[in-house]
Image 1 (cartoon, rainbow, N blue to C red):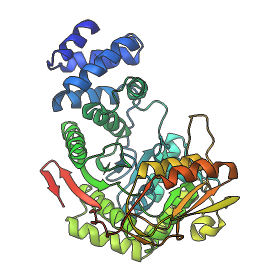
Image 2 (image 1 turned 60 degrees about the vertical axis):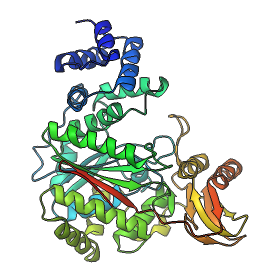
Image 3 (image 1 turned 90 degrees about the vertical axis):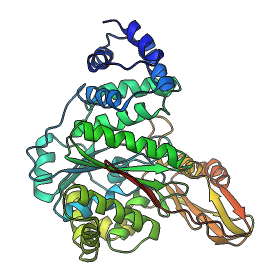
Image 4 (image 1 turned 180 degrees about the vertical axis):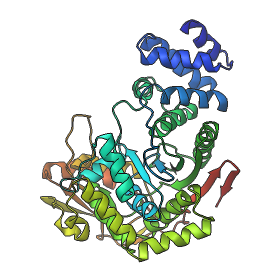
Length: 440
């Protein structure tokens, strides 16, 4: 078997066999297939696509390129959730404790920030003392004892994906559904959970810009899960505007705690409740309506917040900041950004808002950058809101006041105004399961 022939086969639009796909993934992971041949193969996939069967087989081969986590030492059903990334997307810190408090185990491996989108691990580490790197036995013991642990991804989880993504990033092959789906699902299959809920963000602040593209991606990932005997469903959620009002690490943790206590922004509350209910449904906890009632009870009783505190405490975190978020380290400098005209906020370029928070220090511009956990921004006006000239649109926070100029310029460029109230976009746009697509 030669890589040259397999590149030509995919270039000509033919279907690869399971053995051929395994040869490619195994050879590239071991360094036997050079970058230039793999780059050619990725471009062939980008241009010619893959069948669902091919995509599922490639995903499984990528998953098996490294450690396959065996969660059998954890009692009960294990559920996982993955978001395709967004701005202000702090849902894991809300829904994971809710689901765990309802009796479904959460043994979750999460990532760090990527580009303009935040990462759950970075947010968790903004809680003083919190460790997100645990030995496997300690990880399993905590899930059995508390019901939940969220840690950073293992260094050897789907190494083929890590190598392939590095190539895709520099060969203009990132935006390809089979490659995106196999990248996400290879790590999820390797992580070992029984059921997986996917939160596929769509809009200007997401990697998928259209609902059509998001549904296509969701259907592909659900098919991969079904092919590999996992229960998988997806919600398509809006990312044309940030979720909630806080963007930044400790700022988002603080907002998440408010939601777990039953208060907070309506958009964040709605999305979190829907995601949590769908996770419980996948885990076999009853009808969707029953699961929604369980979510409400977990929040109103305070049980979900207590489980959240237990998780942070078990991982060394100072839970006093969760009880009283004013105890988080405060940014040295803050600055308000004011509206330059009156009217309605017609739309926001969510990606630019995310970049603005990165410029303030809340994210990384290079992988060597250190995150300023207190940096970020609090929105005061979002799409659809009425605003008067001179009213504050947001407050920016940073440890380095020289960062305000670039961050403010980026933030102001994100806002568009109009004189008539714009049409409201639904937060939950569609639900994708093995049974089909339900749009809202």
